[in-house]
Amino acid sequence: MIDSSHTPAAHRTPDELLRESEERFRAVWEATSEAIALSAPDGVVLAVNPAYCTLYGYSMEELVGRHFAIIYPESARADAAEQYRAIFADPLPPTSFEARVQRADGSERVVEARADFIVRDGERVAMVSTLRDITDRYLAEAALGTNEARYRALFETMDEGFCIIDVFFDDQGEPFDYQFVEANPAVERHTGLHDVTGKRMRDLAPDLETFWYTTYGRVAATGEPERVVHQAEALGGRWFNVYAFRMGGDESRRVAVVFTDITERKRLEQSQQDFIAMASHDLAGPVTVLRARAQLMRRRKSYDEESVDAIIEQTGRMDRLLNDLRELVQLEAGRLPLNRQSADLASLVREAMERAQLQTTIHQLSLTAPAEPVIGAWDRNRLEQILDNLLGNAIKYSPRGGAVAIEIALAGDQAHISITDEGRGIEAEEIPRLFERFYRGHQVSGATGLGFGLYITRMLVEAHGGSISAASAPGVGSTFTLTLPLLPPPASEDRATERQLLSVE
Image (cartoon, rainbow, N blue to C red):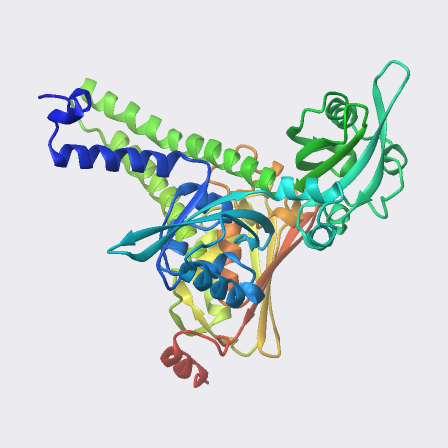
């Protein structure tokens, strides 16, 4: 086979040349840092490159086939569409222009756009828009006094924190403090500091890490801009993504800072890392047992009952773990429909108690319920799953046994179920995060599972239109409380089922 890439162009076929041209175009399209979009005369997006998706925070599927004005604030989309039509029709369109756009998360950016056209038979059939994010440059120019009106509007409304500071150095040339010259409203939202303009940082946060003084001092002294991601323990342990640049000449000690609080993103990244570690650990256990048992049977050349039972048990455990993963994906995508049927809550709870009691001989389960049946429209299987998980946890985290008390109460059109154990309890700081995705508290040390049982439980309860909460104290025990509406909400998607359930007596 001959590699046509090393064949002189004169000796290549038209198809080879066309294919090479397309490959080069695709490589540039995929790799360039500039955002590029191809759009039709009516403004519908035909194609976008990865940098375009990154700039605006949308996926390719969310952009292609929709009008390009999705990247503008809703109030500005009509004007943007009109401007697009004017540029498309103008024989001499502007070389470039600036625009304020809106990312998928609602934050605003400033971009510089260039328009080129694909022409066929003398007629423009598509526009190629090339865009660059110039927000940082825009702010810098604005802070230097150019375009003050636009600067002020962006300064007040931008989602990122933006401030201008004067850095102070000691006699040895070491930075030791800085003063806020100007700060936009987002500074308070991201840092928790109030009324910072005119104040020094050491007065606002005396314990702030020296990292921040050193970083801003270096920018002020060298004139080299810096982008850093760092944690500020003195500001509540928040993480910040910061871009800092010097304003003025070599003698200036004034620095502009653009930053965002990324604490939540960092927490989710850590949670995902913890989840991957837990999943790897919990799935590795059954695999190890299966491998050992299979190797043992091969050595013995026999299929003993003990090994077969172990294999069945471990494959069942893996199936439960994988089923949790599947349900998590379906729940978060909203693809887990509820099969609502008329059910007596007390009967469901008693059945769950019988299943739970089989797991233990040192716990005493009891139920307090109204004399009359508590009838509601629920998915029986999902409600059983919720009850099994909560009762299983009550037993698991009460290793010394004791009472597990279940109480059902009726309040108007809602049913309340509380499950109280006498177990080890939960630390106060962990309670707000118990039902979060990927979260496993300190009390679960040594427990198996992927750590999102309570998260799935919360999602299932909320799918019923209800809520779940927890109250606890270390060494005292815990109480989990479910609130469930007896009937589905009026906006239920399954209208036929809803009409049937509303007739339940």
